[in-house]
Image (cartoon, rainbow, N blue to C red; front, top):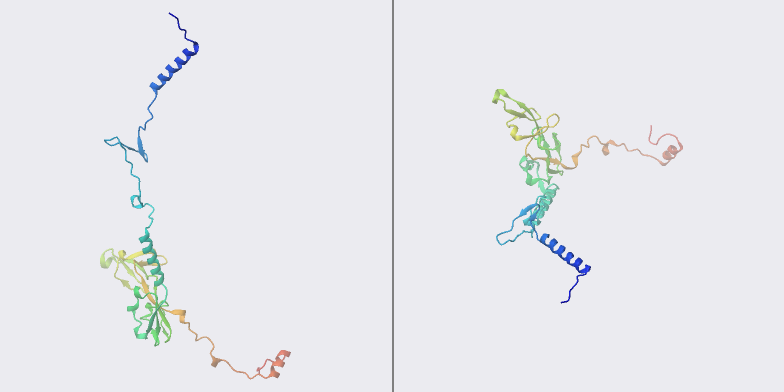
Length: 245
């Protein structure tokens, strides 16, 4: 029987194969051991499946930045436009002085302008309804607008004699008003006083100021002087001023 010999190369190849088998036995299967979503472990179900829900529409996501949808944008635009329009002047027609009443000072009339057909006298009793807060006469033909102004400020004081420690408020004239702290919001008591909460104050405004022109010259105040050509020549030459006596 013939003998077979094993070469060194064959032995080396055999040893390499054995080592490869040993390493394979120690190898770890290439499988996913754990699934997480944003750091939170997701366990497989009974069928060894993992279902990860992925948002497919905006409504599936928390709106933590307060983004607006189309309807909200439209409503906001409409509101802003309405506010801008309400602050502009709108024709309100003509009214006699007797028709310019406090009942007109409401939100619905903000920006309306009324043309006076008769003279209107503002008295000390009615001047509080006017922006200028001044007693005077506004002539016929003037335009009267309704505008929103800053709420009136009040001074706070405690009146323990009347109602324990209840806080009362007085207007600029010192007249006590029957309201408590719940009705007012503080601005700067040292300079501005207290303001009524949620109070929109509307007043009449005589547009364009209706300045008092009584201090200006009128045609009757001007003296007409008959100046001749010779007077002008003398004036230019440095002599007497034309018309001077």
